Amino acid sequence: MYNPKSLKAEEFIDNEEILESLKYADENKNNPEVIDAILKKARETKGLDHREASVLLACEIPEKNEEIYKLAEEIKKEFYGNRIVLFAPLYLSNYCINSCTYCPYHVKNRSIARVKLTQEQIRNEVIALQDMGHKRLALEAGEDPINNPIEYILESIDTIYSIKHKNGAIRRVNVNIAATTVENYKKLHDAGIGTYILFQETYHKESYQQLHPAGPKSDYAYHTEAMDRAMQGGIDDVGLGVLFGLDKYRYEFAGLLMHAEHLEAVHGVGPHTISVPRICPADDIDVNDFSNAIDDDTFAKLVACIRIAVPYTGMIVSTRESQKTRERVLHLGISQISGGSRTSVGGYTEEERPEDTVQFDVSDRRSLDEVIKWLMEMDYVPSFCTACYREGRTGDRFMSLCKAKQIQNCCLPNALMTLEEYLVDYAAPATRELGEKLIQDNMVDITNPKVMEILKDRLVKIKEGGERDFRF
Figure 1 (cartoon, rainbow, N blue to C red):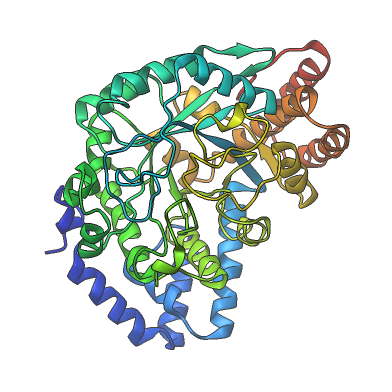
Figure 2: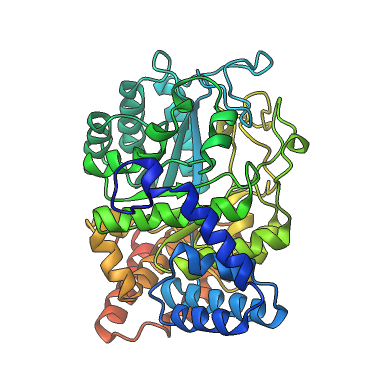
């Protein structure tokens, strides 16, 4: 029985409810009256439920699909402006005791080199990332209680935050590790993490069990209920995601939105971010083994419909996707991207890109500077801002500001200040020249005279005085 307020996975992700929603969507995918009514509601920017959004995803009317894309673009701009937040993944260890059939870290893979970074190696990786200009990391590690216990993760977080190299500093550490206990989530919270990220992989229980035949991750309910335990442990910001291509994408889409509705219903705050990875090649993994892989057009529509359904939620696309694909979905809803990423353990300190420990192939292999220049050439403002997290604007405090569309009053000036830091400390000459013009062009959008006065003063202090880490 479907119950978004239940704490039981099979009640807030109810299979029958998803199937009924997909049936309703099929019945109305060519019904302009129903679609128009849903679009009218969506224009109020309060979001859509999983059933309404499923109709838009299934819609086959060309002109209505154009409206869907246009609305997604408008909502993205209304909530997030033209800012794109940059981050990088940092792989600590690929030791893992799970048997996930889509991941090369699975325990039976004998061809992959197993590596776990020491704290000194982590320090070197972080300095390399700081020297690129990164301020925000996403920690990744396989599940292995012997090699990767919670104590190792906590020590690694402490190491990362402690490193101040030249003008570099990692100001926000997000964590993507296996589902764990309330007690361990409290420890992560106390360590000062930003967002706790956990991909569901698939919401289809039968497929989930086939894809996870052994290991602790094989427990569907424990995995699916992890975000509730994280929030009980004090973590305000959580990040959802599925690996599109494991099961039918429309089923996953409905399940993803039901999970967001559940978090709102129980905790009063939905997901801070939603990631949209697609299955891609990796060591010991052949995408041809997965018949549900989705094409670029479907991927773009998924991004647009998620943006419309949950307008307040940040959306992330990684370097799994090519430059061309990332360019296409940026304006449809994406607000965060990775840049200069390495998906191997210890990859940032290697001059030659190591391939023997990668979790997945990287399609966009450009440097961070190239990614930033590319964004600015499309009139986006690259942002390294971590102000909300560090000012305590997390969870429901962030969401209330975001839903009221007030978050932009501090986001744009914060983005411009962090971009100025990057330009002064790390940018290539051509990137810096382009960035300085972009900052000036975007300052006209700041309408508060006092904020403008403070911003101008701080930009001078960054550029000429060597000061860093201002925030509104």
